[in-house]
Image: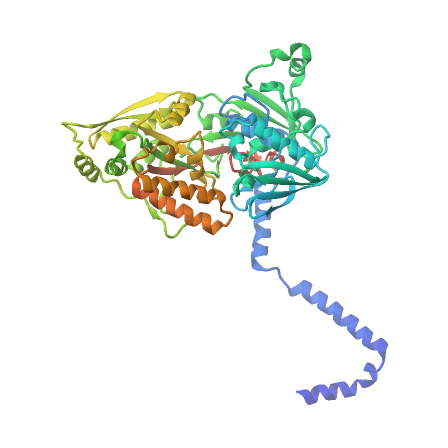
Length: 565
């Protein structure tokens, strides 16, 4: 073969000696190569499938995203403030997502990401953060976003934020120092790996220093934020905002209209406007979609609508349902009594009856993604009766009597009554006490309950996130209500683990602490785990590209509506 090649070259050596011929041959070869690539080289299968899928989707939709239209959102409650730093309800958080943006963002797939900052660094062994603010961003009143504006907002949040929410989330901040126009340093009292996540919440969205200095309360303060929309008061609303009639501003809003801000830093929203309307407490979500709402927030777990009307959009942050046990009560000091509560409850039956089967399994000793975790035990009423009898309680002679505290939420009352009925079957007499939400939280903080049906919102990027609630004044706290002379070693170890995880910056250390805490809590039955649920949002079929992040943070700016035929 080599000899044949040599013979071919020898016969054509006079051509090869001519430089112009050589260049011509090279050019021809290059053209042939390009043509061959165009004819025969294909995209990788995955990419081809992806392109085909996108084309199919576009064909099904029948159109491409276009600007215009108004999105109507049925919100679950009233709006008492437009100041993000004072917001406390899910309805207000939805509005905050449209009016302004926070320093960080969070989604379930990528975790904490930069928001209006370009990057951040953890320095000084976790005792400080350095933030780099993105350039060329302005508030809706034209004020530039810079390091001083961020400093102003962080201090304002600490001053005005509710103590059990924004104020607690930023409690680790000791000092904020502006380094230059677009860089600042946050010094902490203690390492706080939760801080970026907490600064991704809607309630920590930034407001213009020009407007924020006024610090009005209630609805008199409509912030100039960093979001894709601004408040549209309309002619009547503008009159209410004049100095002469400012005191006539309503105390609550049941409807709010927003208008797209043309110079939004991510690019103008596809929608022209948003309309938030408080939904009737008795209204069925499916009926609201049929009545012309595009988004229905907080549909109960298990609720679904017909394909003709819309689709479910599952809220990504899950709620952890527990039966909280007041360990300051003499009868509940007995570990066997607490274990009896655990064995007496048929979780699957309650889930099926109240949540239409829509709840996730609970895991002890870990979290759902942990292969070392184990699921909750099956209910065992006979075992519960044996444990109670061993502790001196019997159905006939001396039954255990408890009060189960719950707020007036319809689902929570239904769950509480189911729990009471099941505990009655093993000889525990339970009185269900329904109280307003404010009173419920006050009594929980004061330890004025025996057992309570409680729902925690865990911080999902961190498997130990929900245990941070144990150290908050707004949640039951194991270590605060234990008697000094009881459970000493367990109490001290729980406190140590909570302290360790609040200071740990390494994810492996945090996970190990969580696993030990979960095992300890399950072994001692410090509370009774029930199940996990996720509230749904429902969207109409005319809504395109809507997305939801933690805490019902809708991405309104990239949402669009199909045009009417």
